[in-house]
Length: 274
Ligand SMILES: Nc1ncnc2c1ncn2[C@@H]1O[C@H](COP(=O)(O)OP(=O)(O)O)[C@@H](O)[C@H]1O
Ligand SMILES: [Mg+2]
Image 1 (cartoon, helix red, strand yellow):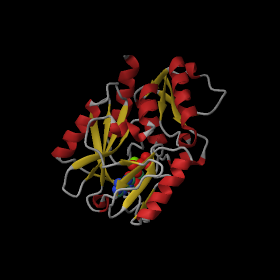
Image 2: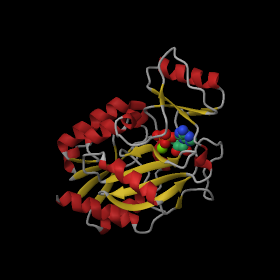
Image 3: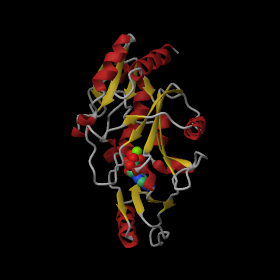
Image 4: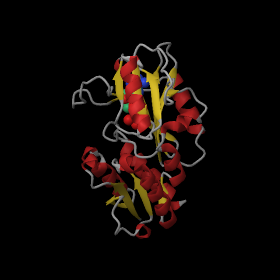
């Protein structure tokens, strides 16, 4: 089996430090993976048995092109996750339709006031890695960032800052083929403290209520998924809520769990048979 490990030639992909781990595990499952730049016009995607979207992390700047790319690739070979999943999942407006508790979100409209909150997070609906996202206690500053994004034609989400990301932390639950693999506690991104080797993600056992919510989130997705990452935070009253469902190009924290690379590879091999 030949599978394209979809990445990019943009420097953003230098953050992908799990490529070799994945490719090695794939080999163990009989899959010959090769890194391929999603934007390379010379690639014939039908040369591959499948394409697995991994680190095309500059797509944020070209989202429409990326979604069109996904549909095109899917007409030539099998794409994981499927193109319609990618189309839905690259715009956080999907959070409105899942029917599960999410971080409270005000969808900004031009010329309207923001709610009164202690601290704001203002983010575009199409983003990754907290790009163009700000945290501020100043309502005017939040309003102004929202207005700038809206003026650029972007959909804007305004949320209260959830302090638990700095204590208990954000929890990411990783699934392969719908089967739970592992979970990690994430370093908070909007604190001004950079992630280092000392504070990077650590393995965590989810609590029962977190498992239950993650299962509800995944049950709301009709398609079969090779990989899924469910990102949860706790509200001040303790309720777990969804902050992001990553079905497009999640970092999978493969280094954190010894068994994860093989589960990823075996799930892929199984799906290629189907
Ligand atoms: N409402 C919020 N409260 C606290 N931290 C937040 C909030 N929204 C985002 N963050 C921080 O910013 C990071 C990125 O935001 P997220 O919504 O996951 O978008 P993306 O990962 O696509 O950029 C989160 O992992 C979290 O650390
Ligand atoms: Mg995120």
